[in-house]
Image 1 (cartoon, rainbow, N blue to C red):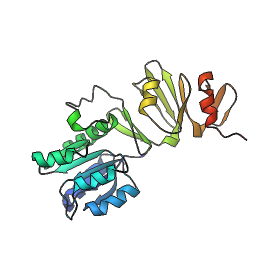
Image 2 (tube, helix red, strand yellow; image 1 turned 90 degrees about the vertical axis):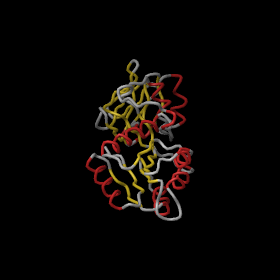
Image 3 (cartoon, rainbow, N blue to C red; image 1 turned 135 degrees about the vertical axis):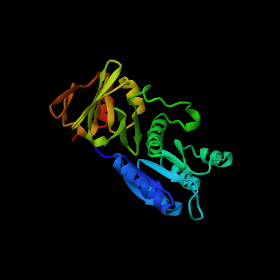
Image 4 (cartoon, rainbow, N blue to C red; image 1 turned 90 degrees about the horizontal axis):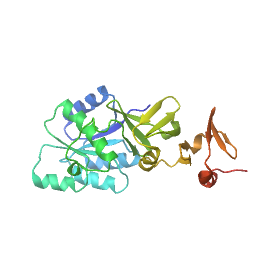
Length: 250
């Protein structure tokens, strides 16, 4: 299971290093530390992180708002703005880029970690801070989001990153969905239809009213079933044509 990768865009070296150390001690990975928008832009677009922490006021000709607007033209990523200037004009300009959380300097380690949690939550619901009046972890302990085709599932207060190639299948279990991977099993508080709608992974397809399978992990199939390892999964008649259209037979 990979750690969540976070890019830090901050021109104050000491603050950037402190953030980096805190993130790594809290189980996150730091994909890069950049002191300017110019330096960060190409790196982030070339190797996207899972979340961006960006100071609004950066050294150089371009600020953090410009960076986020350019990144968002090409990829969708959770964004947290860091700023010491919370005046209405700055806030409104930053808000127009639809960030997922704001962090006001000076901040505590708890503030930082809570902002990351909030940003991932808001991103998973496609909502900005202005659209969310409150954030209650007890309301929805299990939620997931897709960032750069990696699935994140919230389990016991922590986001777990699941590479799509590790997913075997998902099975309906009443109003829940059970997700099976190579090494783990997760129970998600959504029914299979909700999970399907919320999780648009290209290789995860529905083959039965009770099953989604990772098409790349199918080992064999016949008219009525597919096998993933030793697991036999039925093919529903109404889903068969879609399944066969994704399989290349010789």
